[in-house]
Image (cartoon, rainbow, N blue to C red; front, side, top):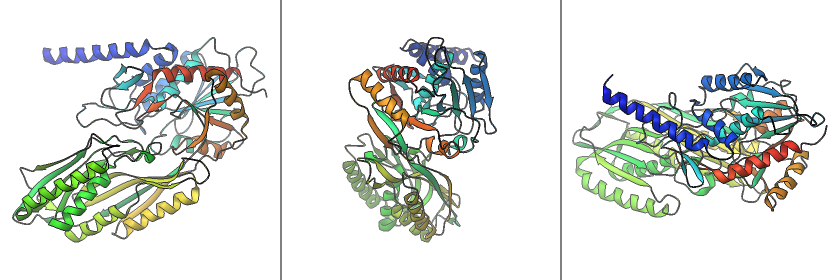
Length: 505
C-alpha cells in the first residue's frame, strides 16, 4: 500500500476515534456511550445482519435471555429489580435500522462505515450524513437500562425491531404470544415535550412504465438540470412545513421546457427513499439548438419565480443549468413525455388534508419520493400517509389514476395501519404527572403524522397499553439530522422516573 494512502487512512481513523470520544464524554454517559457503540455498526434498512448480531451479543454479554424471531427482530428479557416484582411487566421498544442519506459531495459508504459524529453547541450532528438518532437514541436508552445495576424497573422485554424505515416488516411480522408485557413504551418520537398516543398509517404507491426511446434529432443541444440545496426531511413529521420537493420542482421545469421549446428528456435521477422528502434531482435533456438562448432565458425566469416562492422555507435552493459536452443520443418520445409531465403535475404531493379532530395534525399526505427515468423505463415511487384508513386508500387511488392515465402499471403495496389514540390510557395517566413534576409544565398529548410501530404491534397485542416519547431530534431522514444534548438528558431522567412508577399488576 502507498505510504501516503496508509497515512491518510490512519488520520481518518484517528479523527473518527476523537469524534467518538467527544460524544462519549457527554452526559448521561450511559446513553451516549451506547449510542456511539451503536453508530459504529452499519445498519441500513433491510441489511441489519450486523446490528442484529451486535444487539444479540450485547444482551448475551449481560447474561440476559436473548431471542431472535423468524424475521430477525430481537427480544432481550431482564427480570424486575428488587421490590418491583409486583409492577406490570413492560416492553421497551425501538427499531435497529436507520435512514441512509448523504449530501451529494460527501464520500461515505453506509454499508461499511460507522457514522462520523461531532458536537455543535447543544446538538450532536453527523458529517454530511444522517445521524441515526432516529431511532438510535431510543435503542441506546434501552441498552443503558438493560445494563444498569441501579435503575429501578419492573420486568422488561426489550424489543428491537428491524426494517422500520422501509416497510415496518419487523413489526408487521412479529407474532402474537412472544411478548408478555402489559405496557409498551415506544422510544421513537422526536419532540421532548410531546407524549404520542396515535400515529398515521402508510402505503406505498409505485408507478412503472416502459417506452421506446427515439434517436435525438439533428441540430440538438444537451443540458443537465440540477435541483439541489433543499432541506429534505421526514416525509411525515416535516410534510406540513412547506418544504420543496425536488421531483415536483424538476417536473415544473420540464413541463415548461417541453410546452414552450419542445424539450425532450433523456434521463432523470430524483430523490432516494420513500420516507425522505427528496432534496436533489438531476435531469439530462435536449432542445433544438435554434431555441438555445430563448430556453436559457425562460428557465432563468422560472428559477427566479420558484426561488422567490420558496425563499422562506428553502433559502439554499439551487437550480443549475449546464450545457453538456456530449448531447444525449436517445430521448423519451414527445407523446410519452406529454403524458409523463402532466401526470407528475397532477399527482398530489404534500399535505392533502388536515385532521378535523386534532388541532394542527396532518391527516393525509403524499410524498413523491423517487423518480427514475431513462433507457426506456420509468419509475415513480410515493409514500402515502393518513391517520384515517379510508382516506389513505382514497389518496392512493387518486395517485393510481394519475399514473394509469399515462399508461403506467401501478402497484399499491406495503400498507400498514395507523395507531388509534386512547385518551383513557392508564400509562398516559401515569406519564403526564411525572412529566409535569420533572419539568414544571404539562406535556403536549398528541398524535403524529409519522409511522410509529405501535399500531402494527397492537394488531397482535390488542390489550397492550402503548405510549410513545423521545428526545428532540430535528431534520430526521436528512443529512441535517441532529439530536439535542440537553433534551436527551431530559428524556433520560423522564424514562428513569417512568420505570420507577409503572403501575402495579
